Length: 195
Image (cartoon, rainbow, N blue to C red):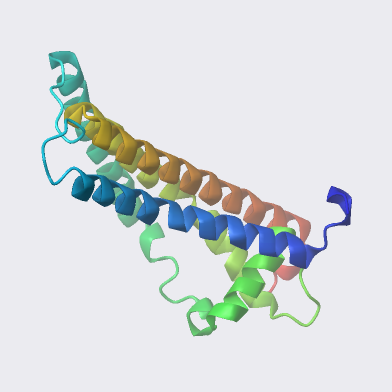
């Protein structure tokens, strides 16, 4: 079977498996770090303590402050524009998790099922588009993580910070990709717009 013979169900299983592996990566890293700590008997092995140069310490503090400012600006902007409460009265709140995943899959693939509720499909696509601001909030977290690595300046901090930066980057990509797919769905199905 080559790559063109993959059915949608097989592709969905692969995506689910990939998300599961990603979700297990951080706890595995934490457990591995604890195992190293237990194996060394809690002695100071140098992997937890770092002596950062002045430039790294100062740059780390600046990055932490910058990341917090980015997060605060994103939250203030979301509150002032009303985006943080966009989904409070959403009809999707009454939908079960499996139905919601099915709606998201239809929006992601751009293939609405004929018997699906039009209002729910449109709301799912609009929410995906409206969540684009989360990318800025997550970017602030990534900047804070890099700053903490520089302030800690130890192997343990570098590993945990690297894992966090990878997680934040994947989340940013997923949020932006979901927003693009939501926009594409709304453009490709203008007939669904009139509820």
